[in-house]
Image (tube, rainbow, N blue to C red; front, side, top):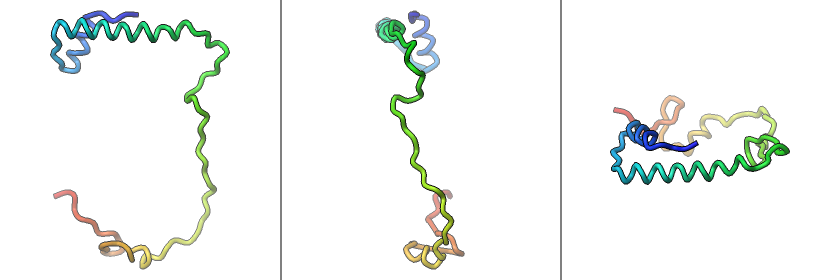
Length: 95
């Protein structure tokens, strides 16, 4: 697969970019170099490699949910700068 100048022009038009002739040529060459490098991956024998979604085995460490009593509202609002009708009062962010 290779990138043609018309492909670069199409993408530039979608991105609303004005490219000079030199830039079109440069980007066409650079994108083709990237594709050629990526094509090297097709040369690798991956038949014995299991498909993965991540190179490292990661899993979340979750604890069991334990039901316990919540703090009383009086204690919750002790450190609040302002409280009104049992809710935190904050400065308005919308007019």
